[in-house]
Length: 217
Image (cartoon, rainbow, N blue to C red; front, side, top):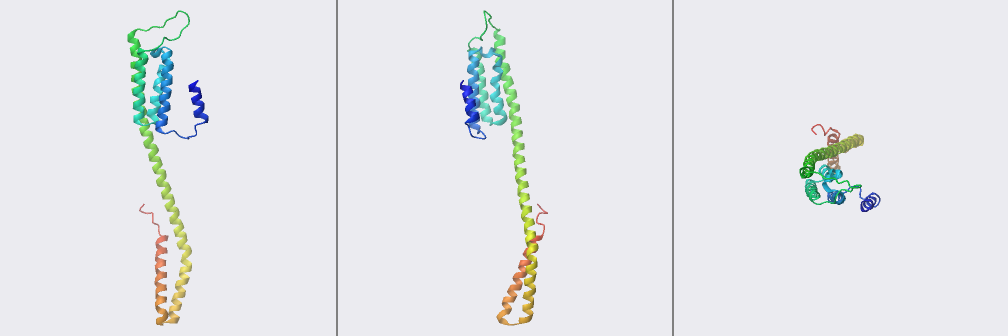
């Protein structure tokens, strides 16, 4: 009943889109304790569903940190040993009594522990590689986004340079005409020279903006 209520709570009341590492580890630990309690009441290590005890550690090895995986694996191994020694008999009908030799009884947790170590090891390896690929893909997408943004800015700058070229040329022509008409009048010649030099400077700036700045990128 508690497990059903917990699942309903997580499904309908828990609003987080993604659980953090601590919360995920806690819920996997809760599932492990809940399952081990049921197995203790139903035969312990001789219950065929004991293999499900390794599921939380395997899930953690793929998606969670190495520390969480190691902690869950150690807890799982301790639970397997405890269930081998302490458990209630497997429920049965009539006078049927399920009994196995001690060698077989201790071989069961050994086999499950070996399976746990094997699967968590490869789960950790696959998880690390998957996270590396995801990180590399995110970095690549970020670089492409920046390149696209730079290219867009470059195109806008080139368009602005092209648009401003015509009025700047007009200003230059008018300034040169004024220079011819006014001549060497000291009252206006300095201002006209300054105007011409600044229009030339603006022209050089616009020329630089219109060039392709991404050839060496």
